Each structure stands twice: as structure tokens, then as C-alpha cells.
Image (cartoon, rainbow over all chains, first blue to last red; front, side, top):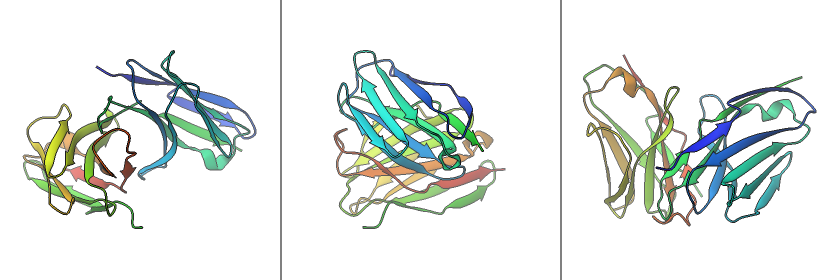
Length: 111
Length: 114
């Protein structure tokens, strides 16, 4: 059974600081996704990582994938308040349209 | 291009009732997946439909069912509602049933069971 674990689950940080969210998964998968969710809202796609060593960056967020370690990271650089949200990683079951999500990391960025 | 739409956006039901939620995929998308999000269990896969056929199913009781129409629109039904069914129900559409196609999520339906 595919399991996806994120840590930390809660993260409170100050504006301007850097931090990393980790996502571990238990079995081989085709791709890994990162999503953002604001309170009461749906999921906003941030990154799709397709292969080992993939790195994608958008603004202050950078995601990477190590398929050998079954680990993805979401790095936040010089955090700003607008990045406060819950971040989910998700992995698909090989070949299927079935995403298995991590527990989510609730990120709060304080001025 | 319009995104995924879900109706209704909010719903309040009583225990024992049944409910039907609707999802209209992005034009041209033929696969629709449903997910349940609760504070306790997180985001969980319910089922996926492609070409009017259920392709994958998550670990949910038979009270949860769905279907897909020839225009790719999908409905999910929950019968004999329980308090624990209160959740945000998200549907996602994609071009096809293979994982090579990214899923795009709708705004969700917030179901409250009292």
C-alpha cells in the first residue's frame, strides 16, 4: 500500500526566513505533485515532478524529487505572509488516476 | 477555457438522508476522480470514472457510489448519511485515465451532515 508522509505537519515561521517541507513516499511512483490549499478552498497545483533529480521553481518556492530516496522537498525562500497556507504532496499510483496525499503541512508565516 | 465546476458548493443534510453531488469536467477531459477531505482522515481517493466506467475505487463503504454520463459529467451519491460524511468533496478531471495526465481540481462541495 502506498503511503505518503509529510513533515513537519505544522510550521510557524517568520517572514524572511527559509525552510523546507519534506515528503516521503513508500513505493515507486510515476510522479509527485505539490499543491497549495487556502482555508475553505480547493487545491491549487504548484508543481509536478516527473523524474529523478527534477527541480522546479516558482517565485519563492522550489521543489525537488529524489526517486531513489523516495523523497521530495518543498523549499521556501525568504518567506512572505502570502505563502501562509496548507501544502500537500501527492503521489500517483503507478499508471492510475489515483492520488495518495500526505497529511499536509500547515504553514503560518508571521510578520 | 472553463475550469472544473461542482454543484452545489454547500449542502446541509440530516443523518439518514441521501445526497447527490455533481461535477462537470474541463471541456475535452474524459476522466473524473472524486476525493473526500476531512480533518481527521485528510484527503482520500473515492473513485475514478472514465468513459462512463468506474476505473478505480478507494476504500469507502458501498454507501458511496458514482456514475459518469456520456458528456463526461459525473455525479457521486452518498446514501444513509452519517455525521462522519461531513467533508469537502473534491472532483478532479483529466484528459485520460493514465497517470501521465495531470488532474485539475474543482472548487469542491462542502457537505455538512447534522
